[in-house]
Image 1 (tube, rainbow, N blue to C red):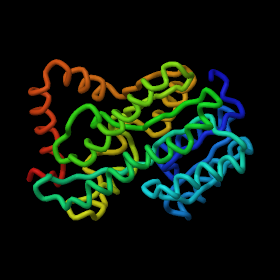
Image 2: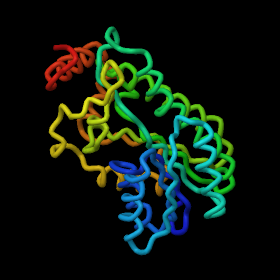
Image 3: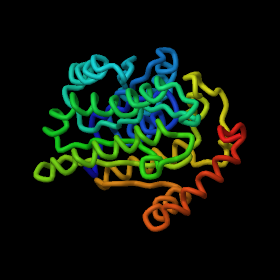
Image 4: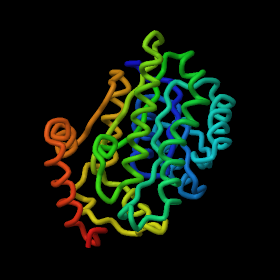
Length: 272
C-alpha cells in the first residue's frame, strides 16, 4: 500500500474539514476519490475544489450515512464508476455538548446513528471489495473514544463503540491482509463544534475554542495518508491527546478531574 496511485478511496463526510482534507491529500497521492455528504451544494463545492487538483477523478455521492440504504448506494455507485474499492475512510461524524441529565435521548440516538452505525453500514457493504484488494478500513475517531468526556456522553459513547467495532474487525481478519486503522485527531480546526448538538438537538452554532490555535484539517489528513501507507493500527494526534490517553491508563481519577475543570471553563459551558 506504499504506492497509492490509482487506489480507489471512499471518504464519508467529505464536504469540509478532515474529510475534505483527506480527499485533497489522497488525490495528490494519485488516488481516485469518492466523497460523500448530506448537503448537495457543499459537496459539489468541495468536489470542484478537489477536481481542480491535477485533474483528479472524483465521484460525489449525496448521502446520509445514518441510512443503511444510502451506505449501500455509496458502495454500489463506487463500483459502477471505478470497478473496485481499496480504502474506506469512515469520517462522517457529529458531536454534542450538554449534560446527560438535561439531554433529550434523541441526541444520543442521532450520534450513534451517524458516528457508529454509519461506520458499520459503510464497512459492511465495502468490506468484500476491500478484502479482494488487501485494502484499508479507517475510522476517524477521537480521544473521546478513550476517555468519557463530561458533557459529551453521546459523543464518547459513539466513539467507544467505533473503537470496539473496528478492534474486533481487526482481530477477525488476522489471517487476511485487511488493514484497520483508528485515527484520533484530538482538537482539530473544523466545523464539528459549530454543528455540535445542544441538549435539545439543535446545533450550538458557535465553537467554545479558538479554532485558529488548533491542528489544521490538512495536517490531520497528511497523518492519515501516511498512516494508510504504513498500515498503522492507531494514530493519536496532538500532544494534548497523547498525554490524555497515557494519563488515562495510569491516573484515571485525576484525569476525570482535569477534564471536568477544563470543560467547565469553556465559554457557555454546560456546567455553568
